[in-house]
Amino acid sequence: MGGNNTKKSAVRSVKKFFLLSFLCVLPLCLLSEWLRGFPAAIHFSTFSNNCRSRNVTILLWYWPFNRPYSLQGDVCWNLYRIAHCRLVDQRSLFSSADVVVFHNKELIMGRQKLPLDLPRPQGQRWAWMSLEAPAYSGNLGRYANVFNMTITYRKDADITVPYGELLLKEAKGQLLEDVSVNKESLACWVVSNYRSQHKRSQVYKELNATVPVEVYGRWTKKPLPSSALLRTISRCYFYLAFENSVAREYITEKLWRNAYQGGAVPVVLGPPLSDYKAVAPPNSFIHVDEFASVNELGKYLQQLAQDKKRYTEYFTWTQKWKVKLYTDWRERLCKICLQYNTLPQQKVYSDLNAWVNANNT
Image 1: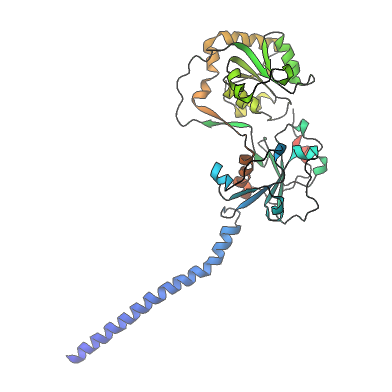
Image 2: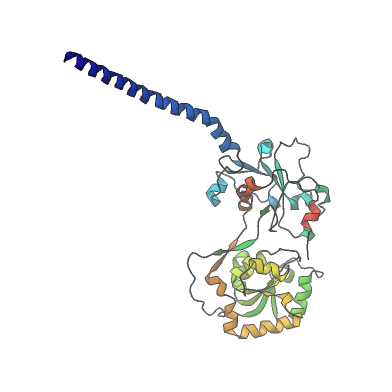
């Protein structure tokens, strides 16, 4: 009897031994496997093209128009919820920057120069940025094989930064009221840089001979402060959203802010009708090219202003859409980080001038 108890006790001891051994060894094995995979995990999270755990450093070489913005704190995250994006303007950080951005206006004016004398870190990308039409881009022939990235308003740019765009409203807007209330002028135009050779100037002269156009801006010595701009435009049935240059996809704040946010129907002149249709709501604007003559356009504006129902239809888009303006250079620069890992690493613009001027109308 005593022998059996001894045997049972021994068996229990052996079981306990193996159980304790197993419980001790298992964590060690798991830890070993975890440690074995740890370097690979670090490598993946740090260097994988598809991973966003590493900060991308964007260095702006010179602030556009010498108007700096604050870069205190995590600007891209705090303002635009773009993570792992470090925006700096200290040139001393050149050697550690992933992307260096050069604004074309300062290049062509000689206010900034490319740091060609500095050793360029391997993998660093140089970005050419401009929101101007090609006619105002200057001599780009000297920048062959220099830039790896373009930042401009065109859709085929590496980073597209439009002047504005449409966003869906969270809730459907209220029914349209009488949008013709408080309208005092048939058409208005705000212009400071008037050049008689511009197509917009020629169209304005012909249109003004048919219908009255109220003109504001430095050209007529009737400047509008920004605080009065939209309020003044809201009293006009139509706003002449005439671009200073006719170029593909070149659609500026004249449409997005002045006309749409000002509450006037835009009469547009710039890129082809198809470019406007690609970004603007249907039946929200009137393109000069839709008419056989400027005289016909003038007659149409007069008739439309007298027809409340048809005029109001030009605002039905506001029930579903709202306009977002892009005015902060920091937001444009932060957008680089959203696409940084998906852009080709070895891309070089061998003929930047040809790319900028491609398919211009």
